[in-house]
Image (cartoon, rainbow, N blue to C red):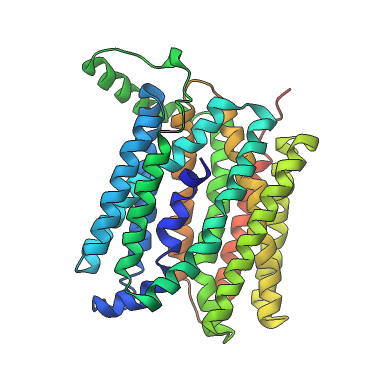
Length: 387
C-alpha cells in the first residue's frame, strides 16, 4: 500500500534531474519542459475524481490494476516520445493511471481501520512512502549520467509491472456487502449517480473542511517544489548539488513528522494533532515570509523555516485525510478522490503562482507559503471534534 501511495512522487522525482537533458534533446523552448509537471498534476487531480466512485461500486483491486496498466502505458509513451507535446499527453495518461493507486490506497486504509488508528496507519504508510523521494532524484541523476533520460521512463515501466504483480498478494478490502452483481446498465446508472454525489460531498462540512486543509497546505508545498530551486541556486548562489541535499533533508523532515504523528495521534487524538501541525505550518510560513522579505540569515535563514513548514506534512495530511474518510463508511473512495483532487488542485495553483509572481527575490515564495499556512490553520479551526 505504501508503494501504491508512492506513485505520485516516483512519477516526477525520478526525472527531475533529467529535465535539462530532456529540454536539450527535444529542442524545447524555455519553460516548455516544465509543462510536463503541470500536465501530470492536472491528470492526477482529475483522475482521482474518476476512480473514487468506481471503486465504491466494484471494489478496490480491479480499478488499481487498470490504473497501473495505464501508468505503464503512459510511462512507455513518455520514453518513446519525440516531442515535448507528446510527453505532456503521455504524462496525463500516466497521471490518470497513478491516480487510481493513490486514491484507492487511502480508501483501503478506511476499509480496514477507523478513528485514531486509521490516522496512525496512514502516518506509518506515508513514512515508508517517503523513502521514494529520498532515492528517486539521486537514482534519476545516476541513470542520466550512465545512459539517457529515456531509461528513467523504462525504469518506471518496470516499477509498474512489479507493482502490478505484487497487487495480487493484496486482498480486496471493500466489504462484500457493498459490492454488487447488477447488470451493466445498472452499474453505469450507479456510477453516474456516484459522480453526481460529488455535489453532495461539496456540501458536507466535515469532508470539505478536511479537504481544504489538504488543498491549502499543498498550495504551499508545490510552491516550495517549484520555487525553491530558483531561490537557493539562483538567488542565494548555492551549487545544484547542495540543493539536492536541501531537498533530501526536507524529505527526512516529512518522514520524521509522520513517525511523530503515528505516536502522538494515539495520545492526544487526531484533531488536536492536526491543529498542532496546522498551527506550525502557519507560524513557520509567516516566519519564512519575514525571512524572505528581510533576507535575514541568507540561505540558512530561509532554509530553517522552510524545513519546519515542510516537516508539518506528517502532522497535517494523515490526520486530514483520515478525518475526511471517517465521516462516512459508504463512499470512502469518492471522499478520498475529492480530497486528492482538491489537494493536488491546490498544488497546481501554488506551482503556477510562484512562477507568475517571480521578481528575482525569495519574497514571492515566502508570501505564498505564508498564505498557505494561514489558510491551513483557518480551515482546521472549522473542524468539529467527534465524541
